[in-house]
Amino acid sequence: MTSTDLVSVSSQAIAAAQVQISSTVSLSKIDSRCRGWVMVVHAGDPLPMPEDVHGASDVHSTYLRQSGDVELFPGDFLLQGEENHHRKARGWSYYLITYSPEIGKFREVAFDANVKARIKAAMQDGSLDLNPAYLKGAGEIASMVRVIHAMRSGFEG
Image 1: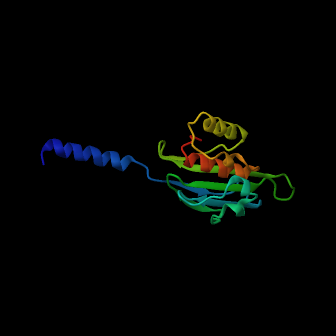
Image 2: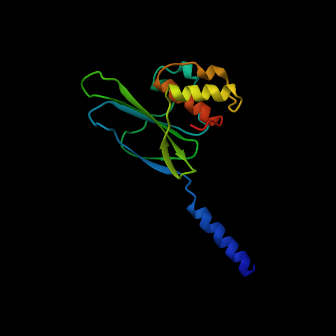
Image 3: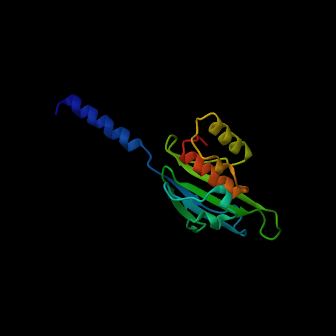
């Protein structure tokens, strides 16, 4: 092995050491008095069609403790729901988080009607190969599932 080879190997080792393979997400609720849930859908885990999702239990993933840390790897998604008020019925807030290896940390993913319109447009122009049946389904959790399916098919959320 020559000195040039050693420099090349060292550069590769340094580059490999700087690559983030996962990101740690600290779980906590905004208001500890409110009800909530958290689950992780790992890359490759089967998901239902969005039209078959009427609540978090339809996702068929394991609920996590709502405190502590969870490790997200590329292709993993964290779904979270939290009640907006601990005594009064003021709805729920939902969050969809994924690990982004490009930036080396987790990021929140939008799943609103604008994203659904972008998914539909990408399907129509042929840049996203996804069955149109994935556009069916209503509600925030169904929307999260739709976006996960789309991102698994190459959509940039």
